Length: 452
Image (cartoon, rainbow, N blue to C red; front, top):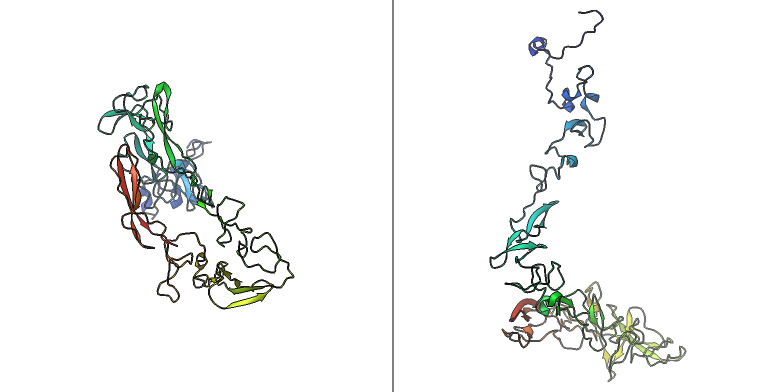
């Protein structure tokens, strides 16, 4: 040894020299530091030494996924090489998942998408869900009927589509590839008949209309536009999300004259109080109960008949009445109303909410229709389970019988009704006549008959 030079450790020691001493030194550079081995990547270039990882290969309490040198991360407290299948989703390595039924063996989310969906769109997997990716414009595609065409805005158009001239099997050609202008990018009309347009979402608009117009260069266009407002019935108003209805907030059978026009029907002068309506018994409360524009003197002596109102709908069930002198009905009771002959008008199904929570839907003057009975016919007192308005008769909402849908719709495609009008609550087949290009076809659907 030359004086002044320091001896360096010998890195390579044959295993035979150490075997006799019972010592085995693992110098495998692929051994994970977290498992007690040396990391070959830790060779110090300055002196050629193999430096052991800090803390014996541990990550000093670092969170899973923390980088700890090269492509290694902290996982379970150890510094290991990130790989698919280790249970950690390594976004930096492009992993979308790591384990589970929706994860494949390359740590990508598995998608079972169909091979071909549309001639101008390909199925792709986006974050585990199938989506459609439009093919570039100009890509060759196969049109209906087998002819070749080219993709335009995701649709398979003829090679001549977009030149402003209607040719071959084109329905229109306005010289552009704009959708929704009455001539679609594949040179087809947006619609032919009003029935092609469907609803527009506003229940106060009678669907949409198929409007024909003239486009650039005299080309014919057909597009869907909002239809005219619906015709309202007597006393009806309309809300976009509700549709036509007769406002009667207190359920006393009389509409509020502040919101709509009616003909031949008296108005409710207080639609927030079910005891106030035209012809109601006048109470000694200083309120115009009968809507005659005259409030009675609170000090006058008068009587009012009250009976139990178990469901709280403002109409008492038939039973014992109590006469109150110049006052209001006790809690749990309501005024007994009478008809023109002076006979009391009773609620035909006045049950406690614990017995029937929907009993308040049944009362004289109910205008709604319901597809289910309000009581079990086997129950005592249940005679007409669909008589929601208590008039002694079960009225069906729709009793139209199906008309024949003519094949040619030149005279208009009209009709609609039941093949066999079902009874209340029963399900039947309802036929609707739907117009096509020149034909009128019948569409059938299963419906349930609603009654009141």
